[in-house]
Figure 1 (cartoon, rainbow, N blue to C red):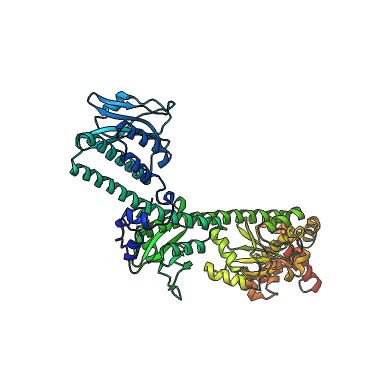
Figure 2 (figure 1 turned 90 degrees about the vertical axis):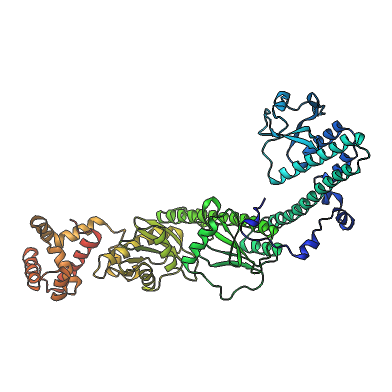
Length: 586
């Protein structure tokens, strides 16, 4: 049952609604064309007629006991009549019912109370009372305690039974007492009016349940939920994310453009609403939070500037919020599963996987591997490859092409995307998002089938490595543009490369190792700077004269002529292999 709205807002019921739900039972029976089963779903109206025409109190109790199961998942365990000697059990037709301890019933002292029964989670002795006091008991059990509606129905049955027993008891002795008979009739009419009110309330609640059940049966969705809520309440309904951005609207007067509150106001509003157990009025809105398992996933609201919302409105909003919470949780779970499957797919593609299986798995997650792809590797020093960094990379690489497959490896983010990044556009977007340009991106050549992905991954790594070891360490490097470094890429014979390096740099490498100098690094920087003394000295953070001295020592130790074109080319290639391929070792 929905919580009563009086805790948070005044309930205003229009004249039209009063006309729609009259309280006079006789008028309802006279004008409502629906069958009696629809008007009296629990049969209490029919039972009341039978009870009040019965002259025997024991028969009244038996009739009431037989009707208990019609009110819900309840069972009448025993019935008692109050006599001068105590309580007398009314014979029951259910011989297999658990035994009620008569001594325990006497201990109740004419009060209602719990009765312990085997295999029953809940059992309760309802007192049947009249003007003179206790008339008897009906003991009811269930596998779980009744809800608010169940309490009302059981209490109504007990009230009708008590009134009928009072009438039966007073009929012989006070046949001419018209005043007492009138009072009993008034009790009956009150009970019937309560039953009619409950019938109207249950009808409205059934309408809400059926409308939202239809939404769920058709696949749900935020738009379907807001439309159903609008039709149920007549008030515009909307869904926002936790930041106040509109996700769905149903009904008139939608603002355009939609106003987005400040983050400070939004957080304060959410805290205010979260303190309450149900829908809360905030200015012209009634707001309910969709937060399954304690996670705030969305905000459901209805526009009510005239404050016309009543208990039915609150009930509909509360139940729509539950449907929305289930829908948003389902969407989150699907997203998490999809992300996991997409990440597993790209991880397997990078390592090498069965082509047929790769196509099938890609299709299952909505990715077309039949198209040309590129591998992109992103590394940003100082930024851990966490979810936030991954999202930033995914947003920076977003284009009109399909969504990329993305994963994290060794502090880097790796993407398999249909779109070849445009020069430094991705790097510039990431630099703006992360607040620093000190990052590098490597991009492979195109890949036309899954079995080429591992090769392209190595190409992207090589492009990234060259960029990070170059003079300008930040930016984007494409494997297509590596030139000579493509020859020195993965797949070459490492022993031959090592032999080449030893041939041209061996003496300098050994000298550096034995004297703790940096002659090879000096030569590498000298070539990187195009043979410019000033630039090379600045790159090495040494004086120009120091650079000249080192170059002279290099000529002496290596016995190489640095002015010879072929010698310079081989030495420059050797220093690049030493630095890029061999990592500055040997």
